[in-house]
Image (cartoon, rainbow, N blue to C red; front, side, top):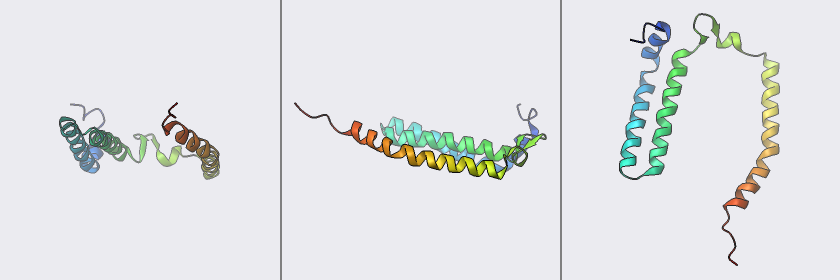
Length: 115
């Protein structure tokens, strides 16, 4: 059906990602069962597992190619100095933004005072 349109990825998907597809199916079925039992937190977690497993399954099947036969992950990677600069910037940003977010979270999760 669709296997002939992307045979390389389809072959890799069958060989590498079948366990993740099964895990996704288990998560989807578990989500439906949890919904039937009115266990909404468990349903959310199981649905998240289903989506995450399917996305990881696709990524595992696609790797190492970004565009099959044309661009690999290594070809598209930025130079190491750029990656290090980005990581340092993200780390510094987290150090700056985390304390105000914690204060806002605490402020808005407290119950309102009774008059």
